[in-house]
Amino acid sequence: MAKSRSSFVCQSCGAVSTRWQGRCDACGEWNTIVEEITDSGVGAGPKSAKANGRPANLVPLSGETESAARVVTGLAELDRVTGGGFVMGSALLVGGDPGIGKSTLLLQAAAALANQGRRVVYVSGEEAVAQVRLRAQRLGLGEANVLLAAETNVEIILATLESGPAPDLVIIDSIQTLWTDRVDSAPGTVTQVRTSAQALTRFAKKSGAAVVLVGHVTKDGQIAGPRVVEHMVDAVLYFEGDTSHTFRILRGVKNRYGATDEIGVFAMTELGLEQVANPSALFLDQRDEGAAGSAVFAGMEGTRPILIEIQALVAPSPLGTPRRAVVGWDSSRLSMVLAVLETRCGVRIGANDIYLNVAGGLKINEPAADLAVAAALISSLTSSPLPSDSVYFGEISLAGGVRPVVHGSLRLREAQKLGFKSVSTGRLSNADRNSGLDVSEFTALSELVGRIAANGKPREPERDEW
Image (tube, rainbow, N blue to C red; front, side, top):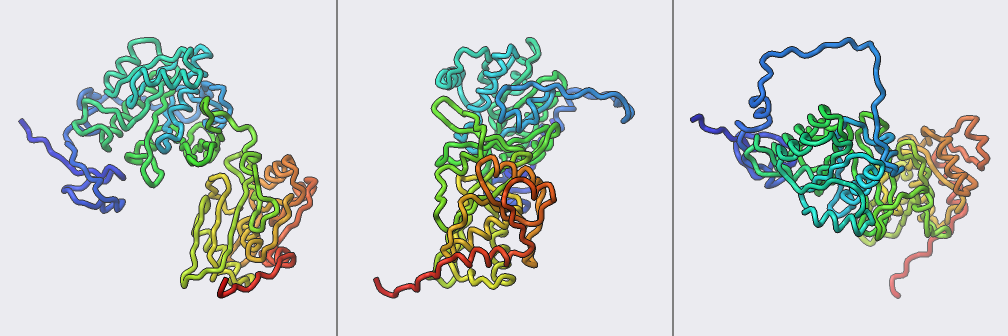
């Protein structure tokens, strides 16, 4: 009998090495390398069913195409992120922190489709059937005709799905708990996750069912397991949120059948997740309109405009190295804005402690927030509250200029809908200038700094003794 060969695989990035070591050379993580048998890895699947040299069917690129059939769940925020519903024959990967609401959201979607007469199968690898029923009853979904199963073996799951009528939706909660007979390693390892995802994705393509895989995330916020799993599936959705806030954000980072970077906003209640039709009103709720350091940013998340409050606090630093604390924005971007204010605008702000926060816990990635951040910083530094009915958006260049950004008309329309009267930004088109708002266009950041500082109050000198 041939001796089984083994390799050492990093469970964080999937890198393979010939010997065990405490630290992975590829990703730098500690204690993530596990020994796995290579003879029964991913290549074990084709060994059990040889192709016998069968050629592939080649077809020309030109020809008639059919639009992808979708299953609309009825949950508008979920359908928005997926591009109009689940595509038949597709595989989706949903990731998020433990307890964020992944299972709750998918159980609500399963019940909504079951009420439409669709055949839905929910396979739980973490909970028993009785526990899933208890959650469904708590959410008021106990009467939904959803088929449940508590199983972790991939072969048994596939045999069960193929034994009856073809399902419309299959939910696997979660992919890290599955194991297959073709792999000798423990459940949750890189090889097990990759092989299980490959088998379920192949079933989705063959049967035409939409398969949703739930994945855990690491401490860095990435879905646990190798990145190749994200390449296998057709869409990757991240469920974001903070336990200190009631709302949750479903963000699409990959979608072969729709737009990426779309978000859906939900609010966690006692009866499950409720859709938020107007996220801007939620993020601006209880805003401190008269406080210095508060600016409203007109941002874009996918195709949806959202108004968000940017909060800044500039305080004298008693330390030799001032503090920089950023929540919800890129800290490197903040350093760039501070350097531009110091060098191009002559603002002495670098010696202060600076705290920046995106209200509500939302994470902003687009550079259009530069102008709103700069306005909030200058407002806090000069103790000058910004107008409560004004919004800000624009990208700041290293030369101190204000560049225009895309989707200006959508941002202005959202601001006007929520009752804002003025906007400060870069150059706009002629159509956007006639939006009904008082538009202030800036070509240089120093112009905005001068306007805010003119209404500021001089900061009182510090007292040595109280």
